Amino acid sequence: MAAHKGRRLRKGAATTAAAALAVAALSASQAPGATGAPDPLQTSAGRSTPAPEVSADGNATGNSPYYTDLPPLNSPVPSPSSTIGTPVSRGEGEAGIPATVLDAYQKAEAELRASKPGCNLPWQLLAAIGKVESGQARGGRVRADGTTISPIIGPQLDGNGFALIKDTDHGAYDGNSSYDQAIGPMQFIPSTWAWAGRDGNGDGKADPNNVYDAALAAGHYLCRNGWDLSTERDLHRAILSYNNSTDYLNLVLSWVDYYRKGSHSVPDGSGGVPTHRSDDDLPRTSMPAAPHTAEPKPSKHAKPPKPTHPSKGKPSPDPTTPGSPSPEPTPPAGTPTPSDTVDHLVSPDLDGTELTATAGDAFERRIGARAVTKDGKSVAKVRVRFTISGDTDATFTGGERVATVATDAKGIALAPQLLAGEKAGAFTVTSVVVGHAAKGVGYMATVTPRPADKLVRTSGTALTCTPGGEFAGQVQVKATYKGAPAAKVGATATLIKSAANPTANIVGPYFKDANGQPVRTLTGLTTDADGLVTLPKLYADLFSGTYLLRVTTPGGGSVTVELKVSVAASASASASPSPSASS
Image (tube, rainbow, N blue to C red; front, side, top):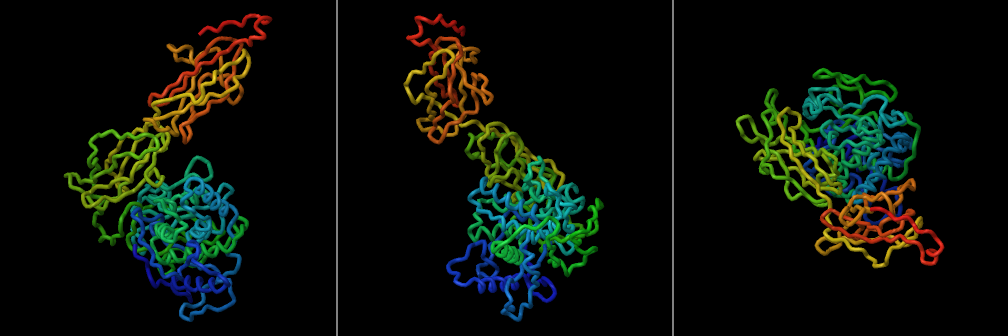
C-alpha cells in the first residue's frame, strides 16, 4: 500500500515525516554527550535508512485513518527549520497514560517476554500505537476490566477515500455487513482479529474492544514471523505491517521515543485525546467524538453513518489484508472480485494423505488449498484463511493458529509450516475463502507423543521398607530413543499386581497425592533434557511382601523395579507376623 506523501497533518504543519524529523533533531540536541548507535526503539524519522517493504501477511488495520498529533517537543528552542512550521505541543501531560491502559500494555509486554522472549517487545511500542490508533482508548474511557465504555469503530472501508475491504465478519464486530471497519483501542480490522485476537484479561473471550485483549493481540501480531524488535529492520517491518505507511512508521517511532524518555499513569478517563487525523481533508458525516460523549452504536445497514471517533491514517485505495502479497488498485464499480468467482476450494496435492508428526516436530507436508471456479478454473489473488481447531497446541510457524494466505497464479495458497507442539492428539485444519461463501477444504492431523524405546533404572540399590514406613531412596529412570537420551517424554508409573497383571494394586507401596492420600498410578511425568525422571517418594502400608513398580513410556520403553516391605530383623522375634498381602 503506497504511503500518501505530502499529506497535510494539521493546520500549520507539514508531513508527519518532516515534523518527526524535527522531533528527532530537537531530541538529539537535548541529549548532550549522547554517543554511539541509537537504540532501534529510539530511532526516529530522522534516519535516512529506507523503510522496508511490508511482509506478505498484510496489515492489522486495513490502513485505516489514524491520529497524527506529534509528541511535545520538550524544548523552548524554536524549530530549526522554517519550512515545516511549528508542530503542536500540548505539554508534559501527554506523557500521562490512563492507568488501566498502561497496565494492559505492561501486562502484554510481560506475557510476550515469557512466551516470545526473542521478540523483545517493549510496552512503549504498544503505547505509541495505542496513542496513534485511538488516543489511548480515548483518554482511558474504559471500565475496570479494560473494556471501552463505548465501542471504538473506524470509518467503513468502502473505497470512498479509504481502502476497500468488503465485510468479512458478517457485522459481528463492527455492525456492518457490507464493509469492514477497524475496531477497538488498537484498531484491528475483523479479518485480522479473527486470527490475531487474544484473551488478555482472563475472562475466557477475545474482545477487540477490551484494552487488555487488544494490547496482547497487538503484541503477538508485532512479534510474529520471528521478528526481533530490538533490531531496526524488524521493528520497522512490524510497524509497517500494522499500517503500511511511511508517515505512520515515522509517527509511531516518534511516540516510542517520547514514551521511552519518561511516562506516568493518570486516572482512567482523564487522558488527553488527539485532535488531528490523517483523514482530516476527507468528507465525514460526523466529527471525531469528544472524550466524554457517548458514541452511537454502529448501524447494521449496508452503509452505516461514519462513526464519531478518531481512527487511522489515510490508506491507499485498496490495502492488503493478512496473506496478501501486494496492494491492488480498486476495480471499477460492479466488477466481480477474484473471490466472487470462486466456487470451492480443493486440496492441491495431498489426496487424503494422513498428516502425522511427533510432538515437538514440524509436519513434513505443507497443507494448502486451490481456489477454483464452478468449471474448475484456478483463481489467483484470493485470500484463503487456514484455521487450526482441536485440543492440541499445534500452531503454524510463528505461533499462530490462524493464517491467511493469497493464492498464487495457479490458484494455490500454501499454509505456513505446521508445528506439532508438545500435546499429543488430533486436530483439524480448515480453509475458507475470506469474505466469500464458498465450500472449503479440511485436513485431519495427528500429533503422536514423543517416544522412548528403552528405560533403565539409574541405581542398583535395593529398595526396602518396614510396614507403615517410608522408602529411603527415590526411583530414578533414564529414557532413551535409538540410543540417545529421550527428552520431554511422558512416563507413567504404576504399582502393579504382578508381572503378568499390570493393573494397579490395591495394597502395598504407594505414592501420595497433593492431599496426602495413597495413589498407585502416576501420570504426567516427563523426562528432563537428559532423559531422566525421578519419581516421588514411596510409602508402605501395613502389608509386608515383595511388590513391583513399573514405569512405561510411549514408544515401548518399560522398566520394572522390585520393592520389598519387611519387618526389621531385630524386631522380628518380638513382633507378631505381618499380614500377607494378596496380589
